[in-house]
Length: 424
Image (cartoon, rainbow, N blue to C red; front, side, top):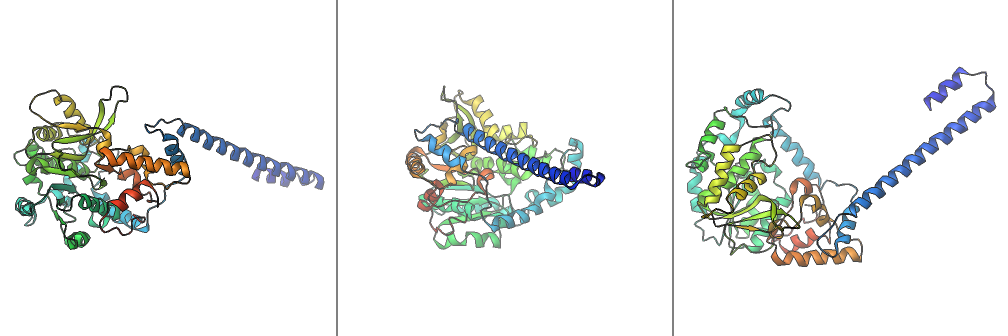
């Protein structure tokens, strides 16, 4: 429109009729462009819907699942609390190494920042780590559960709390120990108080890494990292340390490790020395990737030793998953046929019944009868061989739990305090 206006100014001698003609043509052109753009957008959306409709599902009611997913236009924030969490979590950014720097520059940055990494410090509380754990697990625990929390206490949200509720709904006599310096505090005690008031056995203990990795293959790795002589990588070190902490805790004490975005549906009693497959080959039915969000192992199990050994020998802080899901996959593939390990790889339906790229559908309410039938069929399927559902929090944390959705049904059936389900 600006070009047309300049022409009108340049040719003032043109008659009034020509001005009107040019204006009409300009308006028509803009209208045409707008209409074409709108039409192109509609074609793009329709093409996307067709692509979604081409995704295959295992259930016979798979078309409904695709319909629920295709209705998702945007993912809203679950609540204002999520925004507050993001602001507070931003304080951790100073411990995230800069991008696009060399390994030598990153090591130099790490040396300067080492005093700020609380996880490497020992104090009067952390030095009592072992005795505190032993004392806690003397409480006649039906099962020993572990979780880790590496973020600030303020970031521990309603959905993380629901994961704990589901654990105690199924295992009211179990014991949950959260390895976390942030939650081993007055603020952490306030967060856990509602569960303690119900009589459940839960506590948070600041991990002492030196004690955890002592006499393991990761002991020398930890000392080298603590001295500032090792590259932490671009990925926040705390994420990778969480992978090590869970392995070392199970190796030293035995029990069940769960991520804080895992909803427990069925009792773990009877499970021993087990790890879950995240995906399988649909033809051979062999697993293609394992995951470490759920681990069930006896104390001093040789597979855990191999996991820790692999962590120390192949640590790479630049590749997401290298020290976690891909690590356990590499090791299990190598030792699967060797004698003396005695473990079970459970199918995806056990811990990962929905993959990360399809988790959104679990949060959406049914909008018609076909959707309702799909939700009912999926819930029936989950009531069988599924021990719990991993929520893939990185993908789902901003998604509201809609009333009538699969997640709403699961959580309402497996909560113990059951407040603010739909705001989580």
